[in-house]
Amino acid sequence: MKYEIVHTNTFYYDNYVDQSMNTIRLKPRTDECQRLLSYQNQITPASMTKEHVDIWGNNVETFFIPQKHNFLEVKTTSIVSIQRAPFIRRIDYSPEMKSIFHSQLFHDHYLHFLHDTFYTYLEKDQIEEAVTNIGDIEDPVQFSLELMRYLHEVFTYDTQSTNVNTNATVAFSLKKGVCQDYTHVMLSILRARGIPARYVSGYLYVGENSALVGDSATHAWVEVMAPGIGWIGLDPTNNVEALENHIRIGTGRDYSDVSPLQGVYRGGKQRLDVKVSVTMLKHN
Image (tube, rainbow, N blue to C red; front, top):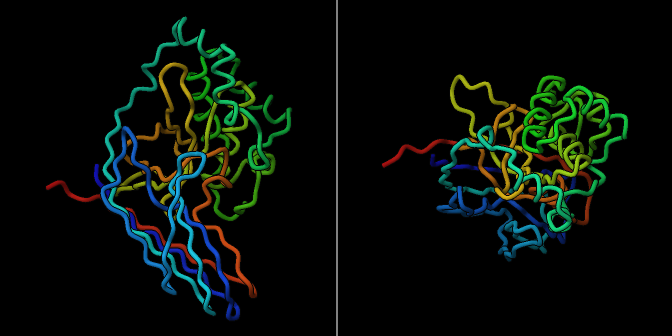
């Protein structure tokens, strides 16, 4: 599958601001299943970007606008090719996988993705509620699949009930939220079970007559480390394995590690308008 993604963030300021310093994480990754074919950004007022790769392997661009301005637009256009095959339900919990999963080396290597953060914190009774409903499943891959199904069934997708600062505790008590909330809750429960899991930021292609939700802005889902196999994407918002419809930008411990656009400026209040379009390109 080949896609073109056009993502526009426009900030409108109440009055003129100056000395705006910004960081964007909007450049999709290239990895074993995904290839970035082209990428360009357009920034208004015009600014040059400086690029680096962060500790999680994400592409990060920073830019500075010294002059006064009353709006800021960041438009990125990416073309990405994806080739992924479903296989998670065929994974067998072998004695070798069990041995790796329970080893100290495995635990230490993925320590970053086993700890709670502000966003992924859940109360003990909330975790127990989920595990009681799922069942005490030893196989980490099977547990992850059942957890994904459970969250999809008990949560209601609601764009009004939470905001970008909502953490897992609040989202779980509401049983409502958006993809970011589903993902933070799932991460917390997986990590409590000793299953390394990370937050994925990206885009979702939703074709005609599709039941998938989450394409109005950036999408979020979970990647689980299957012992001896690698990272596997699971989308609790849609109860599907992340395959050719899921376009990855970055990964981290939670939303704060992959926030699409962060910045500081001197001035008054702001309003943000976000537009995302994901188009499938026909093969030549």
